[in-house]
Image (cartoon, rainbow, N blue to C red; front, side, top):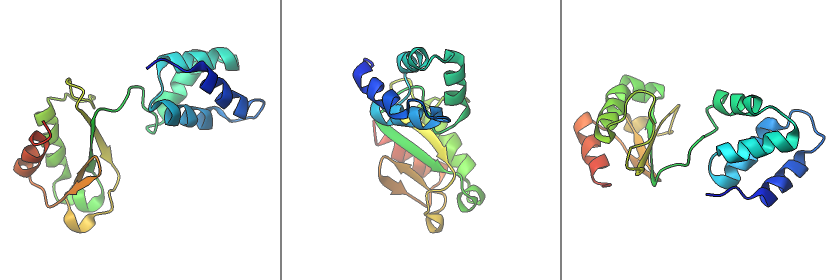
Length: 153
């Protein structure tokens, strides 16, 4: 996706001459584009007379920022207390195996899935729980979650 500099200029103008605006500006850019592209961060650095490294540093420090677009399907694995004690780590491992993800990877090679571990999905009575897009699956085992993920191919 090409960076729309006119839209970025409007966002930058919204925050012009204000202190502490980088995080809200990056949030707005991510809302606009779906992620923070290298091109957008470079453009903002030039316009704001900042170093690219400073912007990249903020974008990589905070987990709320994404540096690549999300895949077609988003898999969220709950890591809250109830899910944790019910085997959330085994569920994560099973999903990583199905998607052939190594440690540190969060997107399948085919671009079909983005894998995210979240603090809580609010479904403690169904622990362990995942969400794929907007559908919740609970009372999972490694075998069940493997079948569920494979059903999306």
